[in-house]
Length: 157
Image 1: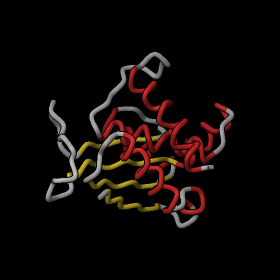
Image 2: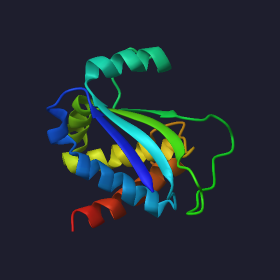
Image 3: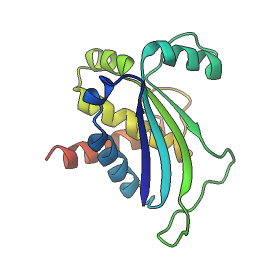
Image 4: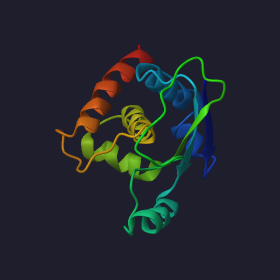
């Protein structure tokens, strides 16, 4: 079972990132990655809060689209199976919807597609994937785009 705790800094953010849509993205992504027993949180925030967090945790005084915080650090990530007695806490994702909307303009994509991309990006980070750059040849970003195509097709068909 995948448990998702979703929170919104502003009540208006739920219109942009509806709970059912977020849960569907996470459920489908986890299914494709063979993760079937975990819990995570996703918070939707604005640029001001994101800038503060990005400064605090990454030393960058600017907003970013997503920050992911893994629950447990280490080189070995859990093997997931249906036989686990307890959910494995993966961690927390924070998404700035203001930055996401700018991404939509910059990359000429819909809000639904960009939100799907950010959610998948965050899940991959929580599962231990990482990237050194934002270049297209990064294995994590290639996996992300592969998943975006599948998840977007299934959720919008």
